[in-house]
Length: 218
Image 1 (tube, rainbow, N blue to C red):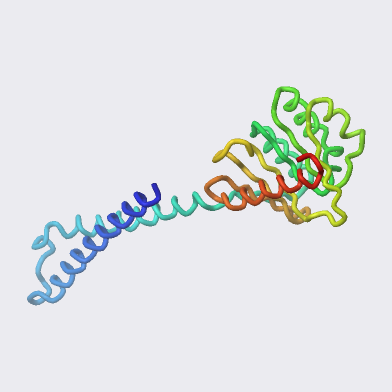
Image 2 (tube, rainbow, N blue to C red):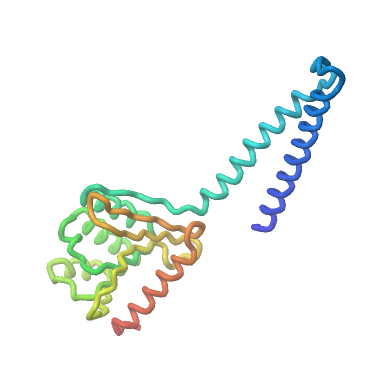
């Protein structure tokens, strides 16, 4: 598919260059022919050629822009913790499977809507996993355990800085990965999919697999 797209772009670019050369040649002919007073009617198709060149320039820009935007990740900036928690709830709701990797799970205590959403999704059969370096407090874990959420505690002495959530991790090509960095009011979340970050998603899956091994679950 990529080769076909490249071929179409090259053909389109070739047509644009030929049209531009013909149009430029016509303008040069008008400039240097006779006294320069020849009416534009002598070249009745020139205005169409010039119009086509302009349309093709716009078309090439739009085509390349659309192709480029496809490979750019989505970025969301949160000024407050409430905005981050609301995004987290929406993002989790969008997946048929969810894996959360976090240094601490205190945010679950701060957001009852997220905790309720995770509990309800787990009860309805959604695969939900939480990977953390330390044991989760029982007041948070017990209800989630009962709902079917799986916890993996790696026991890292030096917890990693990675904080991310992967949805649809078991559906190749449908994955979405949200990576958080920074603090409020400059908390930034970058969302990758299979077009904008397949390599990053693959690395996230590797981290998840190795974390499960480290926790003794695999």
